[in-house]
Image (cartoon, rainbow, N blue to C red):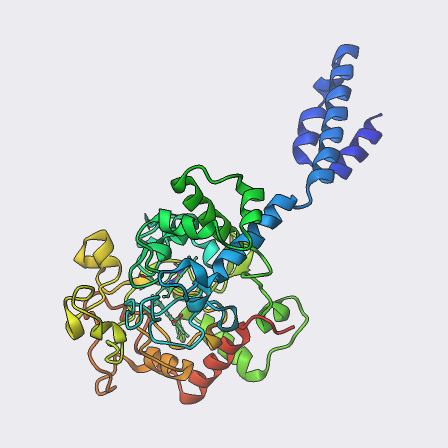
Amino acid sequence: MRAILIQLAMKNNSILFWRTFLTPRCWESKKERLFCLSVIFLFVACKKELITTAPVLPIVQLKVQLGQDLFFDKSLSNPVGLSCSSCHAPETAFTDLNHSIVSEGAVDGLYGNRNAPSIAYSMFTPSALHYSIPDSSYKGGFFLDGRVNTLVQQAQKPFLNELEMNNPNPAAVIFKLNAVSYFPVYRQVYGDVTDVAAAFNNIADAIAAYEASVGLTNRFTSKYDYYLKGQASLTVEELSGMQLFSDTLRGKCTKCHLISLDPSCGKALFTDFTYSNDGVPKNPDNPYYTIPSAFNPSGSNYVDVGLGDFVINRAYNGMFKVSTLRNIAITAPYFHNGCFNTLDEVVHFYNIRNLPGSGYPPPEVASNIDTVNTGNLHLTPQEEKDIVSFLKTLTDGYK
Ligand code: HEC
Ligand code: HEC
């Protein structure tokens, strides 16, 4: 009898099961034995039930489909013509398709202040900005300054941002939703629209489901991923680059762009979601400087202080959320203000920024720059190249 139970337990692969029902106490009387057996029967039955109903419910798939339709829909801006995908296009790993420094909004000639980051892998961002004691840093939250707590809340913002999709209010968005071809899918997932606030939340919920989908947005199909699985080999340059990248005394990149497996997904995300100031210069070509003063009263004197502005503490001025480096080869230009166009320039900057006579314009925010881990790496030109080669293995779609 015990042998059969052990077999069952192994089949169900449950340590808890083992501990609870295979203890000697369980076999003391006939009554207890009966009880144990019935619990075991229930357990096995439930497990079976779980297994048979586990495949993704169609409603979940519909939600992702709806989210995708919404994400690409250019009819939801004011005036029409701009969708989430205009600034987060799949071809460029969900950044600006035209590699613009900052993307133009629905209204001609209006631009936001920051370079559009990739939304791929952003679903793994720890929710809600918080101070992490082990990291001695702020951590998590959406946008480059962590000002929004969840992916769902984030997805509502662009619809109403005057410099982006420019709708006056949620009602204007929901009014347009009623006319879209995929509205029946919306109703299948969420039912009739009875309340604007709820419907506005629902569309954000669907978009977030699309953004969180493994396969569509979070693909994990880079050469590096295949290398880890033993299905691709890295060149000598790429391997050397990976070593330098991970060497905490040389490239020091993994001090912030973690290569270790993230507990949220068991894969490397190349960010620890903390905040720091890389000391990047202003980008004089940023069109944000030229938009009407109603939107940017400081004109070309505007300084993006990042996290400091949101937490209202100058001690964090100049800090931005560490970017993922997945797909980095196809998401130029780089940094919050798009001030570098190539990875060679970025790595060279990390290598020599602090050196006297390095020739860079002053940093956008001169305080709080991390001069321990960035800015003076003593890398040779070949080593810089190797790091770039490694970064290029992080592009999805290798096979
Ligand atoms: C006009 C360009 C533009 C449009 C349209 C746009 N975004 Fe963005 N998106 C940006 C920029 C710029 C940022 C970074 C802004 C910041 O940090 O302040 C951003 C940030 C994000 C982030 C945060 C990523 C992270 O790692 O924190 C997500 C998620 C996102 N957008 C999703 C969307 C969705 C969903 C839509 C459509 C509802 C959308 N965006 C529409 C430009 C755009
Ligand atoms: C002290 C933390 C830290 C270290 C060390 C560091 N980075 Fe970064 N990295 C950041 C932060 C923060 C950003 C975003 C800064 C911004 O937008 O202004 C960033 C941005 C980048 C970007 C641009 C991302 C984008 O989407 O625009 C690249 C590329 C990059 N880092 C590569 C590297 C490489 C390669 C190394 C090692 C040589 C490295 N980083 C070391 C913190 C760090």
